[in-house]
Amino acid sequence: MEILPWIKKRIGPRGRRFIRLLIELWLWSVSFAPSHLLRVIGLRLSGAKIGRNVAIGRGIRVLHPWRLSIGSNTILGLRVCLDGRGSLTIGNNCNIADEIAIWTAEHDIQSPDFVMTEGAVVVGDRAWICHRSILLPGITIGEGSVVASGSVVTKDIPAFSVAAGIPARVIGKRNANLRYKLGRNVL
Image: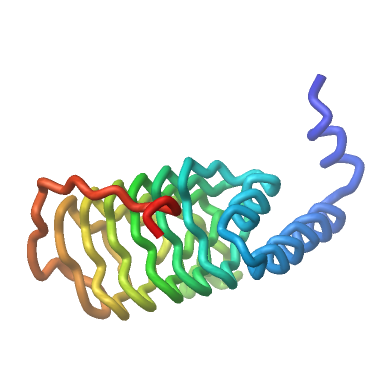
């Protein structure tokens, strides 16, 4: 027996928005907990799928955590914004630096009704997203790629590439023989 459809029908869209707001508010308060483990537990309790040995910095903001997946040995820096509305997947051994914004939903500026569009974002294993970069909806960051500080990614970045700029474009290649392991055990 599925309870969720019954609850959805019973509480309506306003009730769902209220519950979503409560979850996001609760997550925001947990994001300042004095331990990576407490922040990980808070996200897991909110429905996010999180691997082992994940380190999460303080002040993280997560929208729709039940559509978020983070692989093992990944590090998320301070004040990171993760938008799960359109589905967000972050691979293993990724370094997501401080003040990164990853968006999976946006408004269509050409739409007369300003409709919201969504696009899944995938960050491949061992990718490094540097300080204050922005990833926009519907993109894939390939395995082992680096996005330079302050970049705005509007299109896919191939595996083992280095991308920079606004909008980001590939400016180099990265060694494909990566062996490092990140995560909470290393800190």
